Length: 254
Image (tube, rainbow, N blue to C red; front, side, top):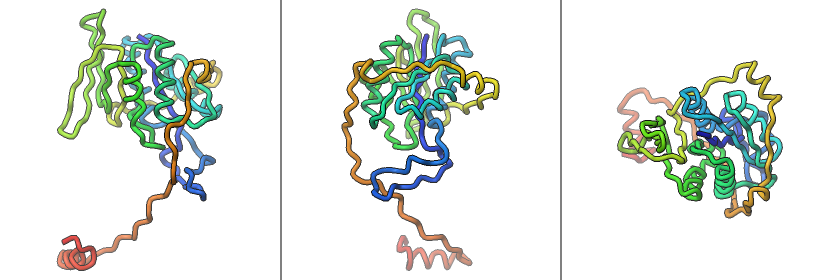
């Protein structure tokens, strides 16, 4: 079975984000970019499935301008077998990304698509669901555990545990399918120095949206981006009576 893992380059979670002066978005020229944490978890799960002999090949794919290839090098260092870059200088919104991933999934005849549940830059949480709809595949989102059932070799199934409001839900679905990774699915490994050096020399295949027959016209328009309002600093109280009094008279929540 071949697995497709989508990885996205985002502003590193530890870097403070600054809004542009014209409020059209956030500053792109920041000191550090990295792989989206949820994508890294999805990739780690693909590597673990390969180590268990369920997977023959891991295809890591990213989309965007030339600068995003560093996340593919990182993916190769972590254990991906191939790297594919769909080159586009245009803004790629979730529907366009899903269409491109669907085209690649059909082209490569993958048996499973693993994605992060969301990207930490736009927090859309849409691409995995849209991909499943476009491919007409079953899906399991917010996965906290993934197992492959091979009791019927001709009909491999994925058994996915996912976190829901009422606790845990277990889904069983025939492959091919789409699974999106939640935070507690696993803890990604670090890239070893030898693997990082090897990844720098690996071939990265490039495609264009036109070669995949996908139109990427934006469907949404950003009206305005604002930083969250600053909160006032907290204060200390000397006893419970003062706390109750201030909650009643100042905060007016009692």
